[in-house]
Length: 188
Image 1 (cartoon, rainbow, N blue to C red):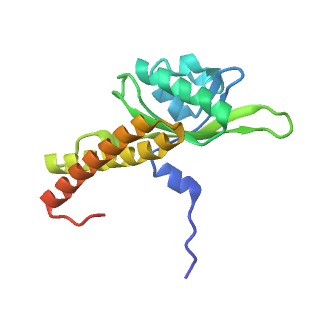
Image 2: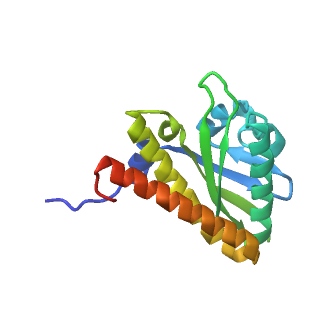
């Protein structure tokens, strides 16, 4: 019997991972994997290094501003981050993507680079199954986001905002419980 060994390339090929990206905060240029470049309508020859503005041109306007801000902030604080955004409808329709990454400093040169992976979330956002299944998936995602908000608001030292996030989390919890009771399914 052979030992089970995870294979990174097979796992990535079977996942929603679109590949890697890297952003140079000093020049505001970004390099994209070929698949990510295609989804963002960046010409193949520019994918190895193009302006962040060009790379975000195919992103919904309000999301593009937020993603640019997240990338610039990551270059300042070095913490891991993630940002979800929507592309404008193209030949493949609109897509939901997530960038996850972290900023690091090259010890030899001192250069700062933000890099990470991109994921396609579109399949999970498309309606599939019954209305009850779709509602359950939406409530589960909402609960994930509420938990993330609670973790994020703690560092802001803003008690009124923290109270509002707590109220939202309680309401999301009630909605989650309602959906779980209504379907008679086990809680996972």
